[in-house]
Image (cartoon, rainbow, N blue to C red; front, top):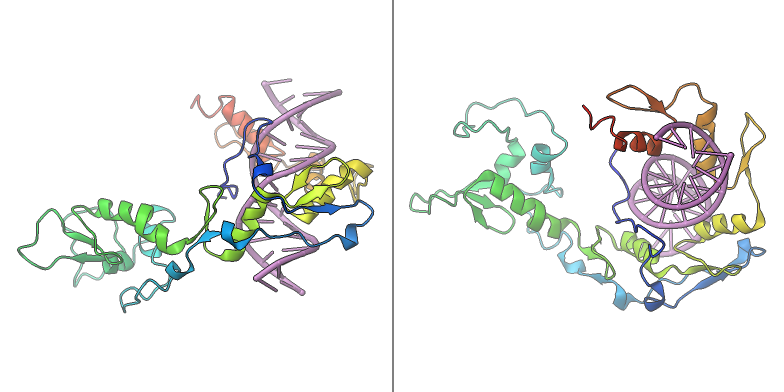
Length: 263
DNA sequence: CTGGGGAAGGGGCCC
DNA sequence: AGGGCCCCTTCCCCA
């Protein structure tokens, strides 16, 4: 499973940016007023840095590029590898190249037909017409520049993250502005339910009980992790020594301690 | 060192 | 579109 947390973690107690300099919109939630807290305020539009014009519409859709996932063509050659389509021997000849190039790849590449064209630039990006001497050069260009620009157009002003939708960006922005503030200790959170979970640390409320023992937890995920301790079968297994662990973090610790490095 | 609990962050989905 | 919730993950701390 790909790691879903793409935001760089902060290492120490100075983990977080200086949010006090960011946005002063805050929401105070009384622990006694869970149900009636005010709606957190989304930052002013001017802090949202995005260019809606470049989303999709900037791409003139030709019959050859009508797929709204322009990355899919080369993604099959980079990440999730899909088996090459049944070969169509009528037209495919990649001059001895052993890298599988799908039909979509084929479409994305326009070989310059002009016999007088510079020999070194025979692979052209169908999106911006830039030419490259090698197929890999074209792939690199598309991955790092062209497709990245067309697919993700909502970028965060506070960090490098980009999103395909404004809603996702707004959600992310809250991780910088932290509009939900605990009235008891002043700690700030990005979302109301995170604050609610935090407030349980003050109230001692533990609504999630283990059915196998007397323990209770304030957080459902922590109960889930706890349930693993009751299980005979550990979920996470080291590929090298087959040792199993109840948590992925423990497996990671194990791997970092040298088991996998030794192999 | 290892395992487990506590707290928290963040993306995705559903309503 | 936005809020609430679910789920996964990570980090820290302690026994």
